[in-house]
Length: 353
Image (cartoon, rainbow, N blue to C red; front, side):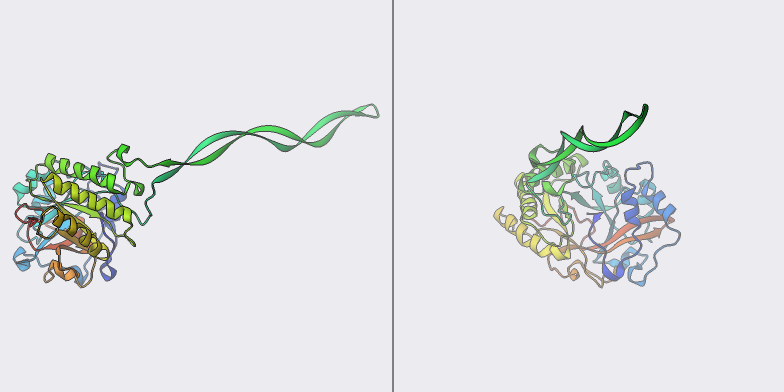
């Protein structure tokens, strides 16, 4: 979902995108998010719009959470459970096609023991504002025989002397030419960790639903927990993407161990909701599909509730993106969220029946 895997920058709340720096360096696994934050930031963002109350009680009935690309480390997560820190839950990223970082893996139990609620995130295929195609263009090298004009010289005898005379002649050469050709995209045969807009579609939706369930099970999340499928911002929602997330939904519902949820931008949320609501009804589920929505304006950590993002079906609102905060002596690049409960993926909260 961010970072984030997540969403787009929100108008007047946009600030220096340290999280983007962290994402770009995710391959350097030896660099922790804490170290990156402290190395890159000399002073904290201090905008009035994103100031937080220091006590959890100030957000009674509205439960603040944060999400960040990589696991911040045990020391940070313990420190941030202090009563002066307003956050109650955190985004928990499963390894997935478009979020290959595995730093969260194996941390569920210790985060639970620390008292953290969690929102489980699976970042599946994205369109990246491209139109998914059923084929990909590749190139093959072909040897081509041709001729080129070349200036050469020959020796001739003039008045008893050997002299050079230059002339132009055609000389045969072999060159390499790259010829384009199309290859059908077989989504079923691609590695599960491949992130490619051309994989967006129903076939891949079913495959990645199975992957999301398997990974949530491996992490030990209770059956009935919500897995939020990350669907990043799109200018348009092509049919292939609709096929992808509806197939993903259907498969998770059919499996029955977990509840499908959705992270989406405000712009795309209504379309996605309308589509997946039909899948819930077809499966005999009368509850609302859980939605985590990014975007909107006038977000206030102290006052806002999820539905104020502009959609009544919102369970979580991601109202501030890409800020750096310091609590208890530890800095982190993060996004700020508000949920109606303190554990958004909790099986007790998944109102899917």
